[in-house]
Length: 163
Image (tube, helix red, strand yellow):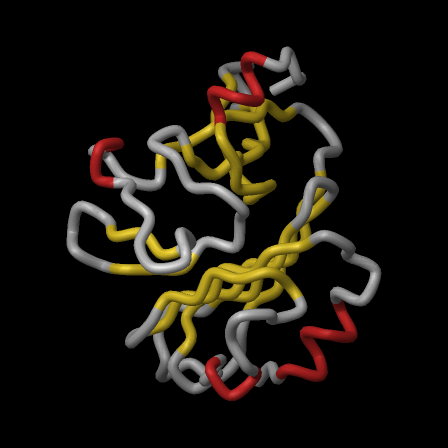
């Protein structure tokens, strides 16, 4: 079983990081180490997946369901063949409407969640990096992906930053 001390130890070299923790009863999105939430909010008995990531790498812990005690750990960086892309947080971009302090959004499904970024716009998205592998025939496929950052995809593209 994983715990907060183990997560902190494994990620101590990861600066400017985020966490996405999904479980059977909640979704936590925050800076890492936690800023908005507290350690008690990460109920490891109910979590299915935890991703801690930054621009350089992601460490992911996951399990198929809560009856399985052990999590599988996977670390991914951008070695090998990769490509990056921005993915919308909601299929309906008009649905991305900040509430309260401007950092809580509501998805099309009605789920509200916090985003640890300064300004949320209709172009707010998550940047992911896809790892490419190859079949024996030489045909390429996406074998895994990692989260990279949250941001305004249009703004990054206008600034000419590399995707």
